[in-house]
Image (cartoon, rainbow, N blue to C red):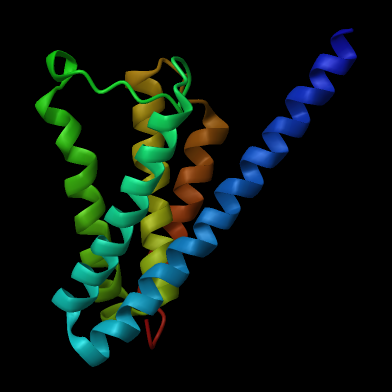
Length: 162
């Protein structure tokens, strides 16, 4: 029975990694396409269009989850006024800054340098978050992996055309 459970866990983890990989592709496409829109309509217009589409999809998703009536899990809809915390606004602000900043960065330093720097920052921040917020230890391999990405950022920054 333990072997079957391990196989299910490994399959689920593989799917999770595929989703993360696809989201990485989507982030590059989103930023580079927004840069293209910004070159024709301006960064403010590209950001507003992007956020309007995102808000429309977010509302549709919220309605879908609300209609499901699920009481547990990520797909539940249970936004009680008494439970609201002001810091819940931070992800939306950060999302706006990402949508605004990535096309700007791609325009100035290119997609590769932008996303290597982004991944380096994500790795460092994730390692710190895991260690301090969730108690996942910062192992030598985790630190070395993050440092390799930071080294890549430094090498790219020194490359002509970056």
